[in-house]
Amino acid sequence: MKTKYFIIFIVFVVFLFLGLFLLVYGNRESNHMRRQHSLYFIRYMVFESQERLNKRGLPSPIIATIEGNISWRRQILEINAPFLDGSVDELSRFFRCDSKKSSNTFIVAVVGDKTLWGENIRHKIDILPENVDKIMLIEIPDNDVHWDSLKDYTVDETLRLWASQNFSRGFFQKRGLYYCTLRGKIGKISDFSSTIELRKMIELNCCPVGVPAAPVQEFVPVPVQEFFVPPTTEKTD
Image 1: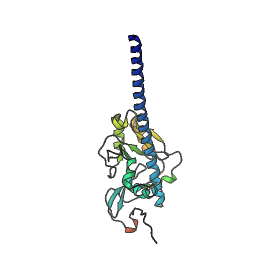
Image 2: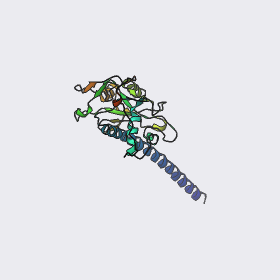
Image 3: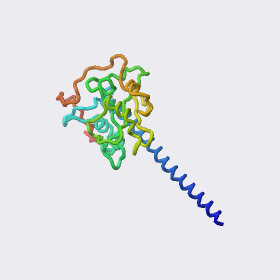
Image 4: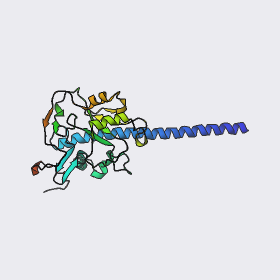
């Protein structure tokens, strides 16, 4: 009789641990899928916002407006919010690690004049050859970068992030950080074998595709008609 109850207890414990394992594994898989979806959806919103502004390429990392400088993150949310049935704050969940508890972003652009997001050069990415595909967005680990801040990552910061490999914890689990390319490819930063290989995936090495632009790190007054004005949903006669 004791043997029978012991076997039942062992079976119960096995099924209990199996259930807990599947629950944790399922949550992790859901987390990874959500992160990848956020990267891809933000890429989509970037190009949609530029199309609605009748512009080609990527926006500047920092945009001058009448009220001051804003980040590309706020700009694309302000432009797309009326079409996505949500406010800017509601849509900011795509940038945030935990949509309920954190206001910090886990997604940034890789900026610099040799990257897709030129700070002093607007790259004509629409004329890039189809086989040219560079990193556009990356995830960053636990940080204090607010989703509405002007902060993004430079090439050197991204390389240091790879070198540290210190992101296999918490929200990011053990698979490391994802990136999204210009063409929509999702990959993991940890898959690169060296910083040299990662740098090649970030920087534009082909023929010149940029045109000089005014520095955007500092606020520079420009004609009023060139300021970005968020769209309005109010009806007019």
